[in-house]
Length: 462
Image 1 (tube, rainbow, N blue to C red):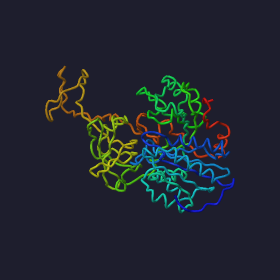
Image 2 (cartoon, rainbow, N blue to C red; image 1 turned 90 degrees about the vertical axis):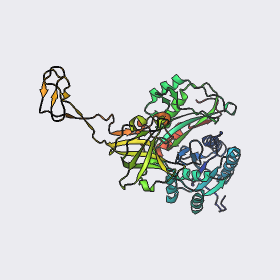
Image 3 (cartoon, rainbow, N blue to C red; image 1 turned 30 degrees about the vertical axis):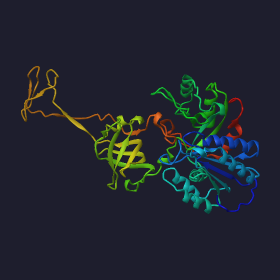
Image 4 (cartoon, rainbow, N blue to C red; image 1 turned 180 degrees about the vertical axis):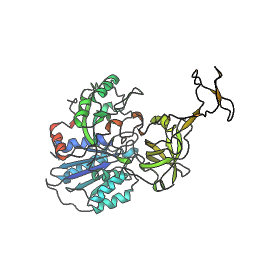
């Protein structure tokens, strides 16, 4: 922890609370801890939330991360901030999965604005690798109190969460939580009901059901406290979906988050191939320079060159559903790709394809013998420069040449994205294009008052 002194708060100041890395691959959940803390803040400390709890997904390529690489920010106004901080520190220390490798960090900032370097740090956390040392430097410079547990890697995410204002495009997720005695048991969700609600709520909710695989997408499969979560364009739609899901299990409650999920926020920056670093994300404009080849497992590899003549391989994995399109690419095609960088043991960087935007297709042709004028059949060549003859009626065409025909490439210009089953948390689904939105403070405050965005130990969802 840093040792700076902090003056007591008043109701005019905003307390920004950020935390991350409280879970492990064996269980627990950072959003569940946020749900527990938010309930205490409201019931015990009578605070006012000035925004929905924020669920901020960070660079998904980071090797040191848990399942979804998500951090949480709570922004509140109230009193007794010192007591609130003590309570939160207690919960982070005692309810994180420290024994299984969680390395939490929690930060507190009392200020009515976010500084530019904190915003910049947060922006970089979406697509690059940031160190704990840099996070500590930013925290100390901006009078941000922080506490670390274990190795304290969560400081990066915690700081990034409070620095992410989500002033641009965003989505919502209503997450339901299980009672302690049910954690680890099979989640029972009626598939047909999910399918029905998915059809009814489309396109205002997304990625609820994979119609190709006939598979539910709203529920995790591990031993964590989440029962299910529904994502969409506004909190009313996501809550309504949950409410009508007819869940049999007696749940502990739910909370609604505002999030950068489904926004492609990690793919906003264009890079030169020569500047691409391991475990980063972004997009590039490039030209295909090798024919795609199929490797073991049905995956595809091809090479691209950018405008600076730098070259890297691109990998397209079969589960994404994009291999059937990538296989049709040809040398000289111009494309844009969203990528995450995989770092192989032989020190070669590979761009893992996250989306494919075809901008220009090389024209491809084939040649065909002319048709017979009399019977309309395909003629046969009689040899070089000897013309053609109809095999049926024997009519000859002495001065004809083969006909040049443009080949249908089987591809069209435009965007190709993975199948829903292969979407990352940040992947932007087709249904979201054209629905991008900006932060509207008045609308957020109105929604916070109009809807019940958190319910804990309520015995139900209504």
